[in-house]
Amino acid sequence: MVRTTDSVENRYNMNNPEITFNEHYIRIYKAFKREFGNAHSVLHPCCFFDASPSKVFGNVTYVDGDERAIDRMRESGLKAVCEDIRNYKPTEEHDLLVLVRPGNSVAKNPGWVTQHLRSGGLVLTEVNYGDARRMYEQPKLYELCGGVCDGEPDILDFESKRKPARAFKFDKDKFINFRHDLYEGTHEINWLVFKKK
Image 1 (tube, rainbow, N blue to C red):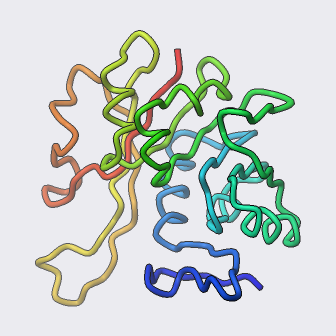
Image 2 (image 1 turned 60 degrees about the vertical axis):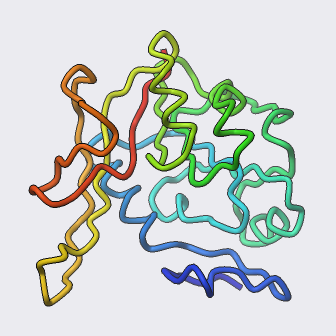
């Protein structure tokens, strides 16, 4: 069974786990794709039951150690590998790495996942997790090259219409800090894009 959800509470039913497609993440991926183009090979490690990248990108490989999640992905026709990301052996390097709450061990050691990314490949990651900070602190390995504003409703908009997510490229020297406000004067950058050198 597959469902689309925006609700964190209802995302996973462990008695009968389902693949989920998170609308929030899908908006982020669409904005990324509009600005940075399509990726031919996407890696989504530590994915659990989230298959959101498949709604936007064509060739996604999911890697997770949870056998139930991987079995569900495979049953749905998705390319999924039940493996610890450190032991994953791709047949080819990936163009895009999507990191969504990758876990503490990956956040502390982003090289565990970026080793599967080709030189010049891109990493899309949430700002709130340590992997973004670690990559930012390693300019010899990663170049900060863009961001995505998630398009949450403006707090002054009483109709609560959701603004579209927007991705943009920027020069890292003009980027002051991770919480710089660049989206219509009210929104923060919630996702960062790095290029592997």
